[in-house]
Amino acid sequence: MNESPGFEGDTHSWPLRPMLLAVVGALAALAVQQLLDRGPHFPVIDPAAWRIALTTAIGTGAVTFGFAFERRRWWWAAAFGVGIGAVAGLIVYWNGGGWGAWYSWRGASLFIAIAIAVPLFQTARDHAAVRFPYADVHGDAWTNVVLWCACWLFTGVAFALAWLLAALFDLIGVHVLRDLLRHEWFTALLAGASFGGSLGLLRERDDVLRLLQRVVTAVLAVLAPVLGAGLLVFLLALPFTGLDALWEATKSTTPILLSCVIGALILANAVVGNGAGEEATHPVLRFGAIALALAVLPLAVIAAIATGLRIAQYGLTPDRLWAAVFVGFANLYGVAYLVAVLRGRLAWSRYVRPSNLRIAFFVAGVGLLLATPLASFNALATLDQVARLESGRVAPAKFDWAALAFDFGDPGKAALRRLARSAIPGIAARAKQVATKTNRWDVASVDRAQADADVLVKRLRVMPVAVAVPFALRKVLTDWQGCSTDVKDRCTLLYAPGADEAVAISRFCVDQLTTPPKVETSGRDPAFAFQSACGPTRYRRTGESWTRLDTNMRAPLSTPERVALKAGDAAGKVEIRAVPARRVFVGGVPLGDPFE
Image (cartoon, rainbow, N blue to C red):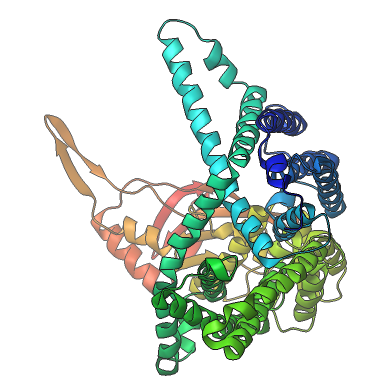
């Protein structure tokens, strides 16, 4: 580094830093807790967008400030933290807020961009210039990862200790600490102070931290030959198994392949190290890293094929577009690593290091762009899916209405409103039905009802004349008291077109009624006859909807009645007689109670 001889001492020897970071962490965590804790409904109800945005700004600003904070040029770290927090908060607010802002692909893209920006800033701060030596950037990146994990481990230990002390004082009737730990504001203070304080303490022992980082990378480097050999064997086996086996084995081909690419990149860079002086020299490790470098591009290409096939088959969705982005990054790394191996052979690491740095800048920039609404994957996916629906490539019954209503954001909701005015009756009716639902589970239940009603047609016998049964009636027939949803249960329906009444009898019920009653004894209790109390079920139409009126019951049948009932059901002798009240007869045997 081009710094004065006293730079290291000024930077890393600052006993006040742990206390300062503990205070910053405690205040930031308390602010976050107060912004998000909206009473007994927390965290089910989404807070206002400005609350989520301000929470994001405070959290990311405090964390980036803590990682970038040094005695030398501390105001740089303060400005960096404020700037990152402001950008993150504004992007989240621009996206609309909600809990999903942190669990969405946009949120992941934003945090990846920030994670890459922090070590770049740390290097520029140390050099007081826009200079990014690879050894410093790579070392800061690995150190930040180790710090992040160590700080959370320390925070967990702090909470375990607090609960242990609370339990200890409970033994003597002092409940102050236990009561405090039950308050969310106190746990927020404890978490923030623990994380910030541990971050400062570890930064005070930066030489130990760097040593720990080198130990971690050395341990990971040992795994490089294992994964490298496994990936090469996998790739060599593909010509014999074919790619079809990948698509048939699982629907998660792309995530699995991308996970292997990420693992290969991490382990290969663990071998490469921060610079030539830290690169692993053992031949097994070096050849293992080269094997990983060579495997990245084929894996990325296969992932691209898998993603392309999925998109061609089912169309675009936001998740598939994000998968395409990550597949693109994987292919970019694959090309860079292949070129580095071809150019440098055993000395490939000196070519791959600058490539890593250039790709890091590119990924951070693209990640920041994709975190904003400028690249609206929701709009692209909506256009594609609606086009597939309106062109007839996807039937309304097979279309993923829940995704359009709840996964595609505002463009999906706008498209749903437009489809409700469609000239195609099936599309318009389905869109109107989905538009009334408040969550995807209600839509799923409607989809199941639609599917059950469609399947019912194949096992429904309509009498006295086989006619089409309206969907509204078929939907209520699938309840357990009517024809159920059992695909093996044949059902008979007494219905005429335009009628306001229908009567259903399930084959399962007929089978139960024609089974001789079981006689059971229990101790001294007298024997009794037991038989299922099922029977015909009546439905009545009101307007366009149908409702179930009742389920008729009757006492166990005699042997002649059971024989006649079974024969009548097989022969289709089902009728309603005036006796003087109406009653269902099957094979001349009355079934169920009389009704008006």
